[in-house]
Image (cartoon, rainbow, N blue to C red):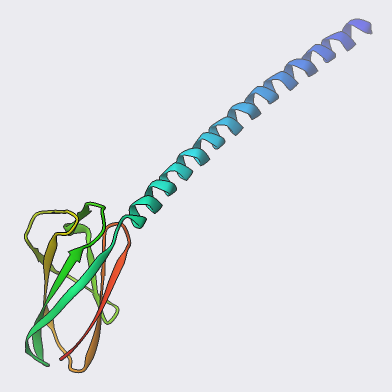
Length: 143
């Protein structure tokens, strides 16, 4: 009977060691994932802090039934942006656009000209340009 208790005790100790090792490994991996996500978050916040864009001018050509809009926008921050990843919303609707100069790199203090075609409607309209870092610029124009 003493031998069986010894074997059960050894099996119990081995099980505890295995469980402890597995738990530690899982917790360590989870902690590494949280650390990596925290670093990514700080990088994203840093990019946003260094991003600043301003809409300098809004010019439309055409009439209330069909017009095109040219947006003069300048990168005022210290972050290099990507022109091709900017989004343009007019009155809350996502619109496709082209940009000049056509380089994808948008350096600080560089001005881009965004062109949006196929617009219609009279009155006051609101435009929002969102950079690839998520920082927006707003403008208002009337047709």
